[in-house]
Structure formats: structure tokens, C-alpha cells
Image 1 (cartoon, rainbow, N blue to C red):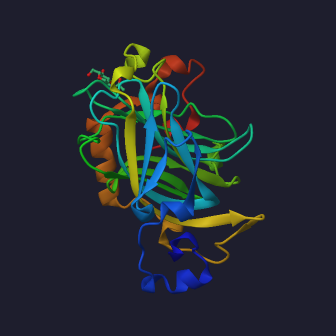
Image 2 (cartoon, protein in one colour):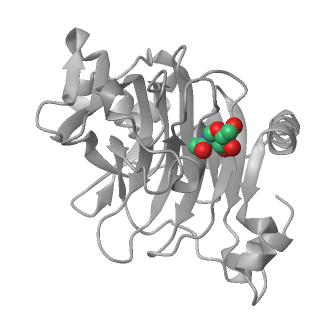
Length: 280
Ligand SMILES: *[C@@H]1O[C@H](CO)[C@@H](O)[C@H](O)[C@H]1NC(C)=O
């Protein structure tokens, strides 16, 4: 579908576009895992698996400079301790930019952690972690990254869980000069993922499988040094948080946030990062 190209034309005819899920076969490449990643059902579904010898992963064919990307994911069920399932954007090189969703597995019945981070020019250290208000292994749920020049909003089923605003005005780096590709993976991280590495992956339960579907990309495609958004793009490009979104964000942060770098004074003895003193 045309949703990959928000060009002048599609901006003008946006109301005429039937926005539907992208075909994985057309939009992504499975890049590692030696057959452990599979595109199924005519491109509607993509599964990644992990066993003792390898995990697996895929990446978008296109690179983007700003966009709104939605992915439905159903996480590894049962005993997923030690596994990490990801969905993120990243630019290449040693001073890369990155916007992360990582799902840290757990023992059956114990909660997954949704880990988020933002890197600019190779510097991260901006983690926020959350529990979810549902069992993410029972059904597909939508995880979204909205990235425009003013803010990054992480959402779960349309509920914003984190906003990272552009505070360049007070000297905080913001990712906006490097195009990023979308990536997803399933891999073993039992040295740190579950209860800080205490609970190891139980390989007798492998292979572990996570499923992805309904990828939707509305983005400025970057190629040969040019953006497909050559005039004013769609509404996501200037989207802000309205008061309803802000109230929902506060609800999530109050009830489900389990780690926030902005309140971790011990970690930043020289003082918290500057953006932490700004209300968001
Ligand atoms: C796993 O469950 C334990 C016990 O409830 C909890 O402390 C931890 O945050 C959970 N998640 C991960 C990824 O360790």
C-alpha cells in the first residue's frame, strides 16, 4: 500500500487512502537467524524464534527520518525468562540514534518488563521501564513509536507511556539528523534481562516464539539524501499530547512505571540530566 510514501500527493489525498497493514514481505528483510524468522500468511504475520544456537531478527527495507510506526506484537508465552523481544529504530555508525522498545521476559505468571530508551549520537542512559496492564502473551497489542522533530511518543494500544521532548533549547541532544531503520529481534539476554540476570533461560522450553503483525508505517522515507516528505506531511509530523493523552500518560506513569532514570539520583551524582527538571 501507499502508506510507506507520505509524499505531497498522499498528503493531499490522505483522506482517500485506505490505510492498511503493510505486507512484511515487501517492507522488511529477515536479516539473521538462519530460518528462525518466518513471514507467513501472505505477508500478514512474521514470527521470530530463539533456541540455544540463535535468535532471529528483521529490519525495514527503508530508512526513515521521522515517522509514526505501529506494530502489533504477541510476546513469548509461558516461561520466557531470559528472552528479550525488541522493536526499535536505529541509525548506523558509532554516533547512532536509537528509539527502543524492549520486552524482558519472565517466569510463567510473572510480569514482563517493557524497557524504553532513547539514544542520540551514541548516548543513551535515558531508560524508563514499565509493567503492562494486560498479559502481553495472550493476544496481540499495538506498540507505537511517534517520532517527529519536536517529540518522541511511545504508546501501547494508543495509550502514551512516555514522551521524550525536544529540549535542544536547553542543550539536550535530540535525534533528528540521522535516518533510522526499523528493527525487531528475539534473542537471549539471560545475563541481565530477568531480575537483573538472576533467572536464566530454560532451554528445555525452546524454541521461544514471538509474533508480529499489522505493521503500519506513516513516515518520511529517506533515500539518496532526500526525504519523501518534501512538503508539509501528515498530522503525525506536528502531533502533540492533548490533555486526554497527558492524563493517560500520568495514569501509566503513576501505576505502571517501575524505573525512571530521571529519579535515579544515585546514578547521576553530578546531577540529573537536564531534561529531568522540565515538566513533560
Ligand atoms: C519478573 O518477576 C519478578 C517477580 O515478580 C519481578 O520482580 C520482575 O520485575 C519481573 N520482570 C523481569 C523482567 O525481571
